[in-house]
Image (cartoon, rainbow, N blue to C red; front, side, top):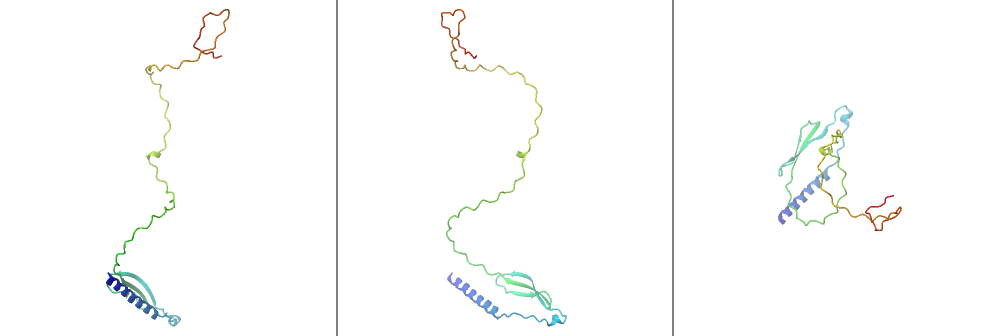
Length: 165
């Protein structure tokens, strides 16, 4: 594993030096406007397509245009797959996120159908059978003694009703 890592780091450093040295050697091109001043066309360069090549193949550039209107197709090889990273322990559980937005209402189903109007009143049904006798109620309070007109019996009478006057 250490040898592989050393090779990858070495290749990366070599590649970095090549890129840095080639970038530092690039100088901006000053356009020659003499041809344009004389009514001639100025050459143009356009990137047409960029393709990904297979790992280990060479990069290439192909002009699919003309010498005065260049259109370049670039093919850059795919790099080799990197090594598997080290598995780490999961971090602490984060706080819950904010409440999401209200969703759009769904299409009403059969449960949301508006009820129709009531029908006409039906005929009176047949008289039902007599029901069972109910339970006996509680005994009422004793009434107020009455007034005798012309003589009261000597017996003390109590009646089981209440004067509602």
